[in-house]
Image (cartoon, rainbow, N blue to C red):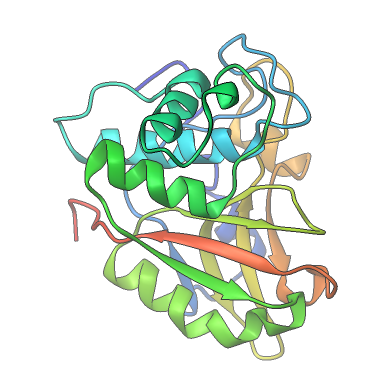
Length: 216
């Protein structure tokens, strides 16, 4: 494990939901990557990279073959090598989304991903069962991005309630020194967000890595 805070969602579900039989969570360990966490200033554009790094840390902790998490430059170089981006992409401040995350996971780890596209926020209800089954079958973190709502998010779980479903968000936009899970949760960097609070006007793409937690 690195010096970053790990498994930042743990404990939140206990405080929020008294009945957890309808809560489905990530399995295994991961580190929380966020703006400036490695001293590199990516504020305003690096959230997709940071969510990808969080997913990569989960892969590293679930497979002894992978010892490091790629840097932002490593990720950019990988996408250029794959001819998905021009050479000018290296060293730029161009953001990445769920599709690029899918490409990098395949290239670096040989891990395929499923892309779920929803046309608008209100249609997220159509993929509730897909997300539930993902956590049951694989237990791996999910990347979520959009267009109007262009802020990348890590999805670490889903809770299916009587009137709404909630996604467990790990937000990479935090800037500051490493903090406890409780601090990050209390400040809203880790939170349960009802589906009804996602933007109606935004489409969303979700990248679901098709790799199982070693404990499953």
